[in-house]
Each structure stands twice: as structure tokens, then as C-alpha cells.
Image 1 (spheres, rainbow over the protein chains, first blue to last red):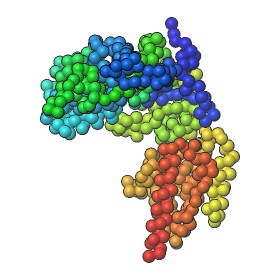
Image 2: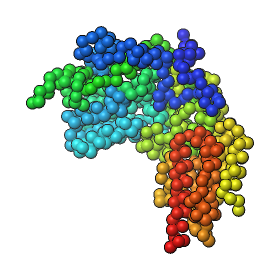
Image 3: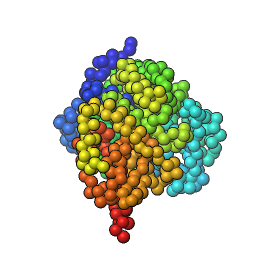
Image 4: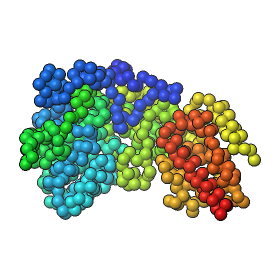
Length: 407
Length: 143
């Protein structure tokens, strides 16, 4: 059974508007997805009826808010098939999740001469925290090279592994290219050297079925707002034994067991890593986003998005001057490209004039752009509510823009 | 040579013909970039890049018989079009004229909503740099 896209579009108020006098075509989903009405209503409902600080409140509202908050944690557990809800930590986003690991796991387990492996296609948020850590500790950052299609060179990765490797932090699906990395193989190989593995799942979680127990990753980081959920909220999954071995991240309320001026003992996971009043409203509303995905089912979503990507590739391949960037065999629904002789920013602005929202630039992956010898790309990324007729408008638009410099 | 005010009026009426159609307006701006005189490759240096622009913009100026002669280039076509408009208004004028020029055509065209906020900031940076050159030449002339 295939999805009823018209019905799905009906759930997203933001899609039904005109920009510059043209119907909005939203193809910037890898940056952030739009939110279904259920998420927006859950946010409003929380502030209208349930607003209160969670945990330890001796009243009905606090009790209710706590229950909803913890229900989302359980829904996230189910979403990524973690063993237990305590392994789910709420953060501000993927970036904070990665930084949390760098600051806590990194401070305890990474020392002088140790090595951290990342790939060429990492987002800056999976590069900079490790560079900061390496600088502080005298550790070394190693980078897996990629081929022209934008796929990691697995054999080269194997060569980088050694007993000095303490952590492999790799993107599950590339934000700039869409490449899906062979992470299961990477994780198994890293483990055979005793290294831990962090998966940056910012771009994979909305498209792929995730089972952290099957993958056997030690950490996974992702963001709610790329999953049809609210902004300012992310998740760090970590295996219980790994999380328990780590020192706390931020100090403050909630993360303590007992505080005296002489010594503080820390709370159990996940609370040990959730100092201060968390983002209660967004956590609660996030459950509505997870329910939305669950109802449609991931395989159905992926099948629809794959068909959009295939159609987009088909319609653009013969456009004179069209240069695809990232042609991996396994991809999520990202079409990254350049137009011969044109700056991506110009192409993006011209598409915007047609009502088509795309992202342009280096996509926070400057080393990757350098690898391809380009300044940036135009990136159209598709979500479950996009349609074939929108893809046709994109292809028509791109063809018209390309003619400007490719007659 | 027409006054700065008259050239601005000309530009405003040219854009009025395009109406509210953002697409044709952007195409038009890109076409305008072709009016820029060839920029010497050797001047595409880090020093000549205008700070505060998202895209790369190189600007140089020289004093030709007391008037400022600008040359500019960019790696994006829309930016080339924008700077060609500025050059059309400000080129070959005295530093005094340039410093006191009120460039109201940008607002009257509604350029902000055509090019968006990132590029509007860049455009403001270009104007600032052009005026700084004029100020430097004026100081030199008065010395």
C-alpha cells in the first residue's frame, strides 16, 4: 500500500502558502522538516493545560507533564529500538549530543597519542568537537577518504584502525550528498580494535529504520527538528554501560543525587546528563512527530522518497550544464548539484523566485567541498510530503536556469 | 553626465517595467552584470575582497583627474549585477559627490525583498567600501 501524499500534505499547514506569488515547494528538508499539525497542537496543549516543571513536583500538573515527558523518552527508545529508555538523553540537538560525548567520554577515555577517526563527509559539528578535544588532549584526528561518487573508501578506513583508535565518529547519511555509509561494517571493525563508535544520525533517522541494538553503535546523535518535530531538541543515545562510565556533562539541578558543600553524588542515567530544567514542551510535542512517522511507517516513507529522488535524477540528467555532486549507490533523498558556470547562491535565489526552497553553499561540510574542488552546491532534499509534480517543477526550473549559462 | 539623482530615477523606472515578477527581476539583475568592464585578474587579491559579502566581491578604485573610477567583479552573477548598478550611479564622480550620495533607488526598487537579507547586507558592505574609497581620495586631494 502506498502513502496518500495529498492526505499527508493536509497535515502540514505551512506547505499551503505562496512565496513570491508561486505555490511554495519546500525542498530544504535536510535542513529542517516542516511540522505536522499534531506537533503544533501538542505544543499549544502543553502550554495551555500542562505547563509545569517536571520530576519532584507534588501536584497534578507536574505529575502529568512528567508522565508525558517520560512517554516521549519511551517513544524515542522504541523509535531507535534501544534496550531501555534510560539510554535516551535529551539534548539541544545533534551538535550538543556530539559535544556531550566529546566533553565527557573524551575527557575520561581519550589521551595523548590516542586516535579518533571521522570521515571526509562529516558535518562541521562532527569535526570541530573532535579537533577541540584532540588539541586539548594531544590526540590525533584521522580522516577516512572518499571516492568521486562520495562513498567512503572502506579499505582505507581499515588501514586507519589500530589499537590507538579510541573512537570512530561517523555520519550515517551525509547531509551534503545523501550518501548512506556502511555503518554496520564500520562499527564491527571498530569494535574489533576496542574502539567505541558514535553515529551522527541527523540525516538518517527520518529516512531509515534504526535499530541501535542491531547496529551495535555505542552512541547515536540526532535532532528532533529533522524528524518532523520541534526545533531546539535532540537526542543522544548511549549504551548504558558506556553512559555510566562517563562523567557528567553540565552541573546543576536534576543531575545530582545528593549535594553537600564537600561532595556531590550524581544521579542515575539519563538524568545525570540532563542538568537544569529541560526543554519540556518540545520533548512532549516530539512524541506527536514520532507517532506521525510510526503511523506512516519508515519503509513506506523511504520508498516514497526514493521514488522522488529517482525521478529527480531522471529528469535532470540530460540538462545541459547540470553537474550532480554525490552519486553514491546508497543514498537518502538528497539531490546535490551545481550548474556549470553559475554560483550555487545565484541558482538558489533563482529557484526561490520560482517558489522553490533549496539550500545553497557548503552545507557546513567545507572539507568535503574542498575534496570535490567546489565552493558549494545547490541541495534539494525531499521529505514524505513532497510530490512528483513538485519534482517536475524543480527540473523545469533548473533547466531554465541552466540555459542562462549553457546555451 | 547626469546627476546621481537622475540616474537613480532611470534605474527605478527600468525596474518598474519588470513589475512584481521576482523571477524576471533576478534575470534582469544578472544580465546587468555583463555591463561591468573587464576586471584585471591580477587584482583579484585577498586585499581587494569586500568584507561582509557572502559571495566574493573584488573592488578597486583609482583617482582619474579628481574623479573616482571604480572597477569590480564577483564570483556570482547576481552580485555582479548589483555592483554594476552601484557603479552606474557612482562611477567617475568627485569624492565629494560620492560621499554625499543618497542611494535611495535601492529602497525604491524594493531590492531588499528581491535579493533577501544576506545579499542586502553584502550590498550595504559594497556601498560602504565605495564611499570609503571616495573618502580616502578626498583626504588625499585635500592634503
